[in-house]
Each structure stands twice: as C-alpha cells, then as structure tokens.
Amino acid sequence: MFLYGQANDQPDYNEIFGEQYIEAQRYLNENQWITTTLVRHKIDPCFAQSIIYPELIRYSCIKDKIEIQALKTLYVQYGEKYADFSVGRFQIKPSFAEKLETDLKKNTIFHSENELQKIDTAQSVKARLERIKRLESATWQLQYLMWFIMLSQERFNLATMPDGEKLKFVATAYNCGYNKPAKQIIEISKHNYFHTGIFSGKDFYNYSDISLFYWRNCSHPSK
Amino acid sequence: MKKQLFIVSLLFGTILQVFSQSPAVNRKVLLTLQQGEIIMYGESFLSLTIATGQVSITTKMDDKFYIYKNGVKKGPFENLDEQEAPQTFNQENAESKCAVYQPQENPEAYESYLSVNDDGTYSITLNNKKYGPYGLISHLHVWPDKSGFFAITTDQNMNAFLVTSEGLKVALKGDVEKIHVSPSGKKYLFAVNEREAVDMSVLNKDFSKMTQEEIMKWAKEQEQKANNAPTPTSYVLLNGTTKFGPFPQNSFYSDNPAFTKNGNWIMSVNNTLYINGVKVKEFTDLDINTCQTYLSSDGKKYAIASYDKIYFSDGKTYPSPMETSAVEKDGKITLKWLSLENEKDLVLYSRDL
Image (cartoon, rainbow over all chains, first blue to last red; front, side):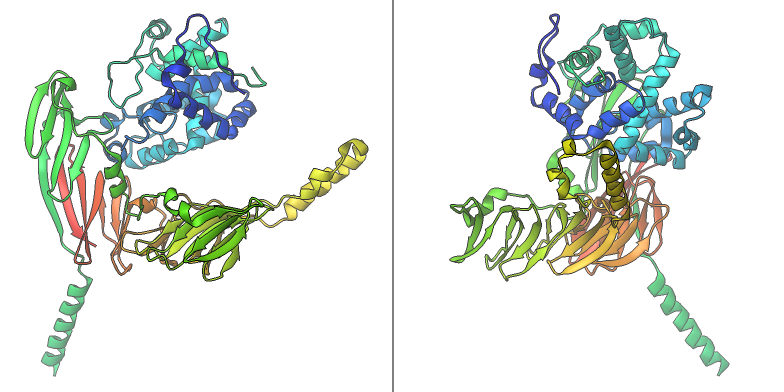
C-alpha cells in the first residue's frame, strides 16, 4: 500500500510526473516478486525500490522512444567506449554493471555469492554479450540492485547515517556512480542533474529527492 | 571414356558449386569516422533509411558534436541545441523494424458486432445471425470479408474457449497470450499457458473447526497433491484446430509465436526455431529474437540477427549487425544491415536470403 502526501516542503513528484509516477508504482505493485525477493535477501523493499524509483519514472517517459539495439551491438563489439547507455526499467548501464561485478569479485565478503562467481568479467565479446542478456532480464536487474546496496553498505560508513540521509546518499551513488568519494556523492545529492528525457532538456530534478519522496510515502510491512 | 567421365564430373562439380553458393554480399562504406570519434550514446541518434542506403548519425569527438546526414558531415557543435534537431526515433519506424507482422489493433472496430443480453451475458451478431450467449468476450476478430469470426470467450467458471462462426468450440485450459492474425486476415494463432491446478474446495473449508493436527494433515495432503500434479505447460494453437506442443510453461511472449509479413509463422522455444510449426534448428550460440528473424516468402530460407552476428540459413554468419532491415521485391527478400568495422567504417551490407 502506498500513501501520498507532501512532506517538508518537498515538491510533490506524484503531481509533477503524473501518469509516469503512477505507472512506475503500478510496475512495482504488479511485480510483487521484487518485494518478496528483497525481503528474502533481508533488504528493506522501500529502501531498495526508492533508489530505483526515479529510473522507473524515466523508463515510463522514454520507453516508447528508445531504440538501443545498435548501442547494444556496439557495446558487445567494442566494449568500454560504447558502454554508457541505460538498459531496462532499472536503467542500468553496462559500464555500471561491469564495474560492480569486478568490485564484488575482488571483495572477499561476496565470495559466497554463487551467481557472482559464475560471471565472466573478462574484456571479451562473449562476456559483454552475456552481460547485455543479464541486463535485459528483470531478475538480473534486481540482482544488480541488491549487490549495489550490499556493496554500498560495505564500502561507505552508512550505519550511523539517519535513514533519510542514507537513502539520499545511496540513491545518488546509484545514479552518478559509487566510485566517487563520499564527500562528492553528498555534494552531488544536493543538485538537480536528473532529467526524464532521452536527451537533457530544460527540466532537471534532484534524483535523491525523488527517491526520498517515494520512500516517505512507501509503506511495506517491513518499514 | 576416361575423358568423358572427367567432363561429366567437372560439369557435375560446377553445377553443385553453383547450387551451393551463397548469394553475393554487397558491401558499401557509408562513412568513415576519425580517430577518437564515436557514435553518440544518445538512444535515438542513429537512423538508417534502407531504401536509399542513407544514414543519419550524431558523433562526438573531443567533447564536440558532429552530425552526418545524407552523406554530409556538419559540425563541430558545442552542444546539440545549436543544430537542427537530430533524427529522432519514432514508434512507426520501430514497428517496421520488427520482422514479424504487427498490425494496428483497433478493438473498437468490432464493438458493433457485440451486444449485452438481459442476464449480463454477451452475444455476437454477424450477417443477421446471433451467436452465444457468452459469459465474457475477451477477443473478437471478424474476417476481412465479414463472412465469419473467431472469438475468445469465458464462461461463468472463468474457463476460456475459442469459438468460431463455423461452430467450433475449443476449451483452452489456460491463459491466452497475444493473439496474432495473418496479413491475409484469415489465419490466427496464439499461445496458451496452462494454469496451476487450484483446489477450489479450499474456499469452503472452515479452518476454525479444525484442530492443529487436522490442519497439518490437510496441508501435507495438499502439498502431496501439488507435487503429484502434472507440470503446467504451454501450447500453440493455429486456426483453432492445429495444436503444437506441449512446451515448457511461459515459453512464449508477445511476438512469439507470430506471423511474418509474408504470411509464414515462426516461434522460438529455448532457442529452437520453428517455421510454420516445423522444428528447423536448435541454436546454442545465438539468441533467437522473432523480431529479428527474417524469412523468405516460401519459408525455406531465413536469417536471424543478434547482437554479435547475423546468421543465414545457409550457415554463413556476418559480425555485429547494428541495425537490420528486410526489403521485399517481387517476392525476393534482401537483408540490409549496418556494421561498424575497425571502430571507424560504417558499412552497409546487403544480401539476398
């Protein structure tokens, strides 16, 4: 169940994004497996879903306008130079997935993750083709999100942060890249860089504010 | 005699060679990127007009933008706003890019054939004849010449049936996936996903009157029943009478199975390609996307485009098709595709199926 309302002078993103906001919410409501999978992995569904909520909104805005077959081919063929485009509802970039896989594999804490150990992180056509296939799968998108949350908790000292700040921090890191220093991520979280078009237009929003807005209005039994 | 044999074998060999040859591949370099110049990441910056072989792309080099349109390069631009709007993607193009037949759907077109009866059931009236009553009509298709119809109906117990104006009534025993009608408008096919068996008696059970032991015993029985129940499968139904399957449950999606634009039909199950219901080939190193599968008019030759290669049914493969289109002329299908070679040459290939 989701409740709506404005809090602390925050913009009402439900009103701003209208149908796209509702469609993003509908997607989560219709895909309860996302919530159950998160609960099974002991991750707060509201927290995790808030991180990707702005991306769900963006996907709803652009889904009928995107054609990324050519970009997927270029990435599979040439790798890094063509790795900076977003795939699927969670709008994960191949470059993000590649970095996450490599960092997780280096970290001994994640050595027990069987699915992770099976992933080929070599710079090869085969490995990139497999990565694209993973990014096209909703199950794998969620897996990447869960790994990202786990790695963020491991990498940054989040335990002492109040919940709202923690969410803003992790959501910003998801959007701008977690490989930046914490100080820089906090600074970025204060600015409006997020847009919902294919190309940057005139309207920019604060990514982590949208996440926070969703989180404040989200209620799962676990919250 | 030896000489005659030699000539015969030479002739035979030549004939075999001619017949085994793949169609010629034409290669044309459309443009060459400079060192360090890359095709823009923006999701809609690439468009290829197959008919003319012209390509429009936006590139980036040293933080400056360039636009190639009809063979002419413009730029550098500091930002794209300075320049005319780049070729943007439109849904019409996307649909025509998909190899399968995707007609525009207009459910309202059939509303005039439907009527609600006093008891809340529905009827179909066609050529002054009334059909039904039906509990619910989820899909209706009337033949283009209006001589008949098929419909998917549901009874009071939520069981789905296929019914036709010819009197056919087929129980579907599951959920109907997207319905596809052939370009001629008179053939149809769809996949059905069987449902898990549900024990309706559970709805009438009063657990408050049962002891903990009884509930545990009942739950164990239910679990055993579920374990012994046959695994639900999926199947494909063509024209209401020809069934293909069973296949693993949920093997199908909206464009799989589907008719091709030339009236054949294809499906892919676990990367095995079926053409007109016949198993053609199982692929281990290629993912079949029906939207990227192209068939000859007779359904005997095909090509499948994937992210890393394009495969032709004569066994030939070509690397990395960025964008693929099929052009049909006099019943002959020619495939055209773009490939970026050596990170600089944007090449247009074409080959008959």
